[in-house]
Length: 362
Ligand SMILES: Cc1cc2nc3c(=O)[nH]c(=O)nc-3n(C[C@H](O)[C@H](O)[C@H](O)COP(=O)(O)O)c2cc1C
Image 1 (cartoon, rainbow, N blue to C red):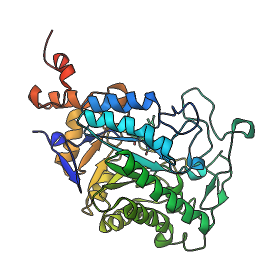
Image 2 (tube, helix red, strand yellow; image 1 turned 30 degrees about the vertical axis):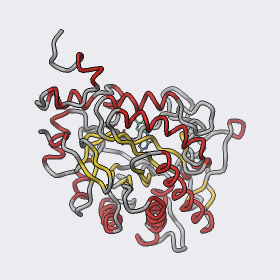
Image 3 (cartoon, protein in one colour; image 1 turned 135 degrees about the horizontal axis):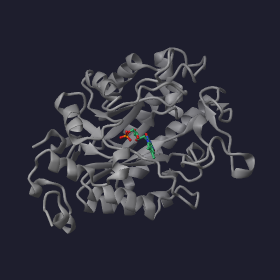
Image 4 (tube, protein in one colour; image 1 turned 135 degrees about the vertical axis):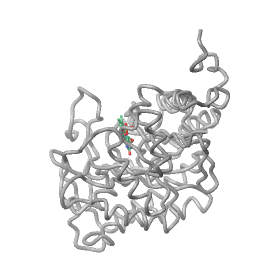
């Protein structure tokens, strides 16, 4: 049995395999109300059919002003939670698990959705722009200037993450992932490049990591002891003076010590940078985090079954996330299982699809 297809248990959840779908913003809430649509049902449902053990629903805002764009998904109200339940129930019917990424875009909120060929950058006033906020009044280059958050606003956002987590749990999700990566709000606090605060939420590592730790603790308190809570981090900004691998490892160890169930190791996007993109380019970062003993997911240009298997066999990570390759190929895990030599009856095909299995011939 390839490692990719061994189960993984996180608290009360056992996931059938270790090939998971990372969060992928779909910008498909056309009514601009954060309510997931049929698109989300088909997008996540198809990948659950395709054999992913766990799918992570996209960055979903915990407050309306935490959206990247007006088309983002949300989990700040009960109408959204009810709509997510339909997606959750279908994913469960495919013998897959489903988590949701809880997000706040901070100073990178209020922008156009990231569609190729579409407009870019911050929304204009006539396009529905809203005031963004972040740790300091320092903009992401070419985006609107955020307002510096007060400590009261920080406390409100901590509460919003906790309430969203409870709502997600109530909607039937199996786990939540706190988004602390990619230059969004929690990452902005972690980075000395965007956090210039002089109060208890800035300065040294303890100050810059305080917000994310408070969010983790509030989410854990909201969902209880049986429910997995994961955190996605950017383990480097690929920029001198940024939040880098040493602090990432320190943060992962802190989170792990407090019971965080998995660290999802991504990188970048708080400042523009030269990123050495190539096959598995973030795996060494995951391996550093795995070295703390934390359960770890690796992501980033992992596209080939043998490559994915090797990440697990070498101990660089416990889980592999397949993003863009899964946009091209929703049933990537089934092909991987076939190419790694699994007997077809052990491959996660829905029974409706077994006649189209790999290697069946015509
Ligand atoms: C269309 C698209 C949307 C994305 N949305 C999110 C998101 O909602 N949250 C997040 O943490 N990362 C997001 N990412 C990053 C992916 O989760 C993943 O980390 C990245 O694509 C690298 O993995 P890959 O090379 O397998 O695609 C997105 C990436 C793409 C291509």
